[in-house]
Length: 635
Image (spheres, rainbow, N blue to C red):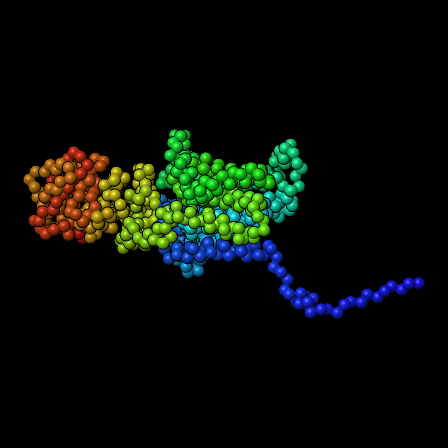
């Protein structure tokens, strides 16, 4: 019988001991993520400058509108279904997007950060989340080279330098759609229910926040050919018709539609916001056929995409070649459609707002990443991926930043620190008590001034200068009016108050009676017939007959006398007529009577009266009791 030979282990050598003592090598995945996070950290560091600047950069209108809602959440509590935006009067709501971004931004505000800083910090966090999700998606659906290329294109473009730290919810939406895509296609590959739930939640949030961005990314999800699909066009079509797949894709669409209907119902309830419902904004959102037939509009949008995102046309050519020869070609065709279709469908929005390109940046970056993968696969694979990416990035970024320096330089290094909005906000803070609403005319409905004044009000856009809005203002106790353009027609709504006063070059106060609110004003106008009749009964004329004053913009001298001079104006109530007295007071819209009070000059001095608007008025002057004296305050 042969006995088994015992196994004798050789004593460990010094070399084997050294190998055993080495720490385990870092896996490729960990190294890739470490490099990706380093690239992202570099991108985020470029935005440190922005935390010390106001929201006065490009499209400050939209940035301050978003910040306003976040501040209201911080001060009055978060109500996602009824977000406050106090810029178009009661009920102080103008909902557009589902306000999750504003709710998130309200947290650092409550912790003590300034509103502007909180908005930029939240936007950058969403930008970083988008970059991480894009990198992960590209590693899953393409390759390491594609992932790095997409990350660099997304995070380091001059477009991102301008917009990543802006007070906008756009990058929250890109994060949502990228999470939807990654988890959605992973669900189709693995059939894990949890991934489907995450995809539906992320897609629904993205659609509710901004459907104009999110909807297009449903297309690559539907076109994606999963790993377990049987080859063949018939099987591909059968899979696309699966109720399970459509349930994941359609649920976000339904969520977006439900929120839009809810927001429209709120806006339709007020005459000041009815014009902002979806039906009223059809041409604004989608554009017109005539607009699409003008080649200059296509050239404008195409030049922005080419110069700010894609780079020179050679990169566009590489993208086309990469898509033709790509694996999972259907998915990449879907990505191309996710870039093209939003521009085609919402054409006017992309023509008017350059920041709307944020919607297509994930798709463009993914396609640039695919072209990078093409170069790596058909070049020398012995070159480390990271080295290849940084080399290509240098070739791509250097000319891109040079040719777009006029776009990003002023925003990044010479931001606007002040402007008309800030000056007007300071004036409003001095003249309007904190809890008093005011009317702001001449700034359309740009909330920047109200936001920095920290006041609530109604932006009197010309489209809402209607009797219904005037009734809304009177019934809710508006007493302050700031006119950026005092001669504009919409200021004629001031005539719907019985009493108004000119209190500065661009400011008015309004009241229902002479007994309050207007004390101290030097120039008052009234259509209170009782007060006018009493003045005529108790006063005595300063001129024997009426003086005809042509409304030609020339000054006419009229006497004043204490305690007040009543100027009875005939034929003055025409639209467009403006009466100015002195140079320091805003012009009055045509009223039947002006009351010149103390402060316009000594007794017997001449005060220049100027009428504009065409035609002429007849003016007779009375010395009558001051309606704001104690005797008149009981009226």
